[in-house]
Image 1 (tube, rainbow, N blue to C red):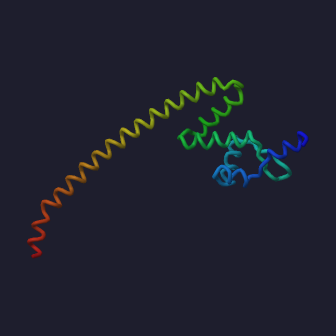
Image 2: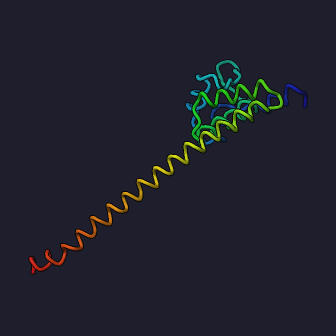
Length: 140
């Protein structure tokens, strides 16, 4: 098979890529509109190469981890600009540390809220139980 045929074998349609990534074609178009991916066109049909699929995997992972589109765009730009990916890795490590700190603060706040709710629940149930014998005597 020649080089052109091999390139064509790498091309995948929007529905095929969406199914592979577990997303909708609309999601792919959204990230295209944001300039984060650039599928090729054959006529009016969008086709995706490995590079765009890999970028989408990075985008989806970034979103899953709570990074903003701005952060993700910066990571992708650094990835393209730095062939050894050292700057990308430095920036990624810094942003990951910031995200860990944010999530730990949220966890602390959740733990505190859960503790307060459990205490409130206990107090409410104690009052209910304290008055139950009275309610049963009044009925009987």
